[in-house]
Length: 191
Image 1 (spheres, rainbow, N blue to C red):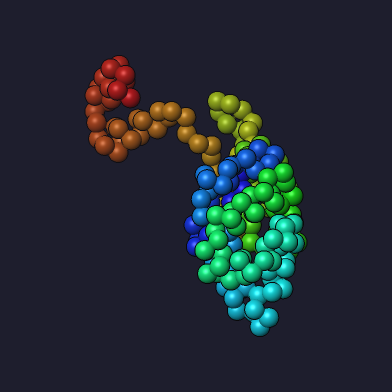
Image 2: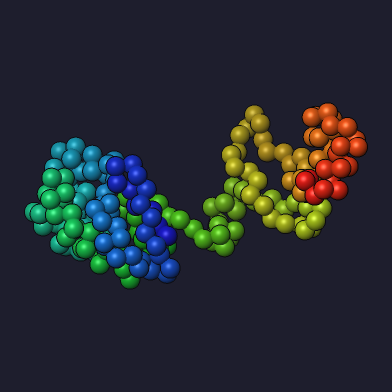
């Protein structure tokens, strides 16, 4: 999947090696994010250089036509715009689009598969994953360091609890059930 944004709302576009969603599934949602639109509108050259960059990124000179030149025109011609953009990306992979967008300084989100995340060089370089020794499944690589904070660095304390591991502490010590009531709850498969 790749994520494109319009008016701050994410729009997921299925990608399995390429884009497969028809324009009807995306409707009028697919186009430049507000920040990009403001960038186009506020330039001294009327956004022409940025429009050239966008047309170059999508690889379609149709995007330079007057019917797509300003926000009102793009909105008026949004269905055709969707078709132009979708056609320009339908054979391109999400990684190609992501890399080219970064080079063009275009905001572009990428949704990775679980296996891509597990092998992501960016996450690896940030030591995002840690290998822990879980009491049931053994050694396993898990997401650990969500944020790198200098004053409160990540510390591994213990693995996630197993099912029911702390029931006695919760029911007997915390909720003050009697030991007999606790045993009865276990016998009745309540806990």
